[in-house]
Length: 240
Image 1: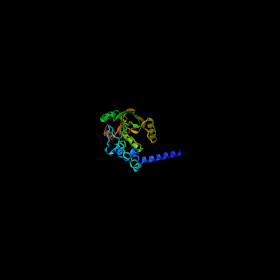
Image 2: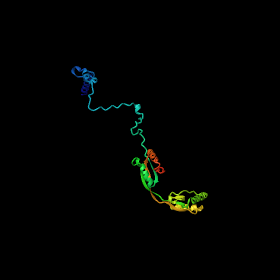
Image 3: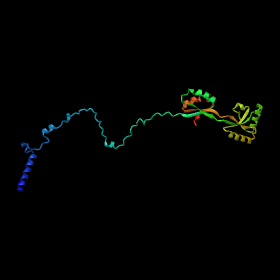
Image 4: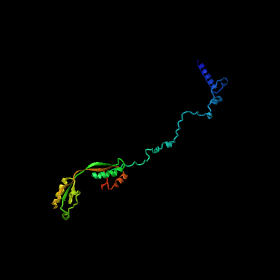
């Protein structure tokens, strides 16, 4: 039995060798050859291939980056429009004011500034506080006034004329915003030898007006400062 199997194995090996070497080609038994003309004829001819266009555009090819360049840090991106230098915004104007103007002065000023740009100015109502004065007078005549001036100069005490015509001829030895302050001033003068002075109210509280320029640029400021007479000698200053 064993001999039979050995004989079968030998015959099988001999048959496989004959098949693999092409010895059985005449009977149609042989492995397919990789160089046979039929197989070559079935190969695709790449030289006649062409790409048929489609309706959609092909995706752009991404260029290959050399390994060395890939390891380099990416350069800074180009400046965006937001990063680009822009023209400096015009600066906001400065708030300026002038005053206080009395009723008559305010009427004159209102006519003068009427030609300025709308909304560039306002005349705001306020109150002109009353004022108190240490006063000497009224004197009988010019000679009595001159004599009192000479006495005050000898005592080194300053003086000037009262602002109100109703107090002429007379002398002002100091002006104060309150009656209490004026009384203290009188006491100080009395300590220096002044005897005939007294405290009077030079003016009572009165309506007044403040000129305000909310956003004055250099051009508007120049226009207002050119209004010398209507401004009544009052200068523009920063708003409170």
